[in-house]
Length: 147
Image (tube, rainbow, N blue to C red; front, top):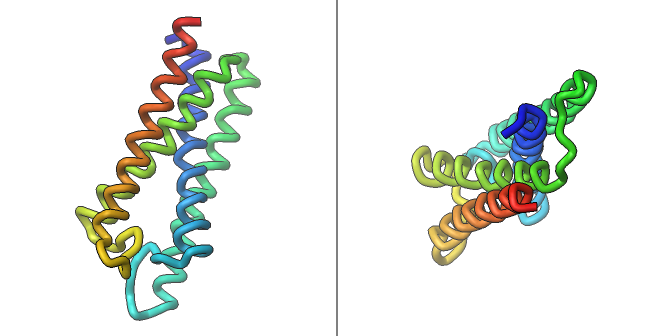
């Protein structure tokens, strides 16, 4: 892969991580209120950890945007929307897979919907969405090679 396209894919990947992190925080933590980053009887701790989570993924969005600007200024940024969009989908799916495996299954700091009749179904669906997004991203990126 040419350096310009690699930079474009990496920028998309970083933005995808931040975007899915933001969607997770907004939808599951705030709108649906299914869980907080750390489930704890101390609501202040839950709110602080949600704030740190939001700060992390906001930083990823800023990093992705700055990387695009820096690469464009050096004329080292590709122009393919397929590579960029593929990076966003792979990054977003990677967020779901890493966050789901680490937080839901290994560390068990929270579940997607802990009060559900069967919380494991929601946790597995979260991982399945991650796999689906990565797969879509790879397919979109491969479309560029065949164009």
